[in-house]
Image (cartoon, rainbow, N blue to C red; front, side, top):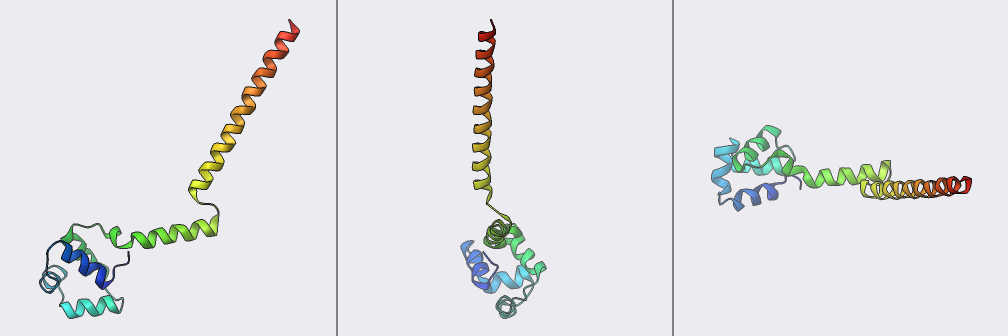
Length: 115
């Protein structure tokens, strides 16, 4: 989620606040100024922090979807995603354990043959 006017407005209204009272009281700005700063993407971090504090929402809440997209982009840029890597590592580990079991069987057979 990106902190857009609609996202913030929805969160405010979910908590039974009215935007026209909430913004001046908690964000210390007028409703129209708030709407314009969201529209022009000039909303200050401190204002978003005031809103987040009043709503008891962590600042990270507003950026989670973007974080997911960034992670997806880095996975595409830098290689496989973590689930694929874990799957490959498990397969390699299983293969190593199978080799160890085979070697143990061969050693046991060689010992028996020597006796």
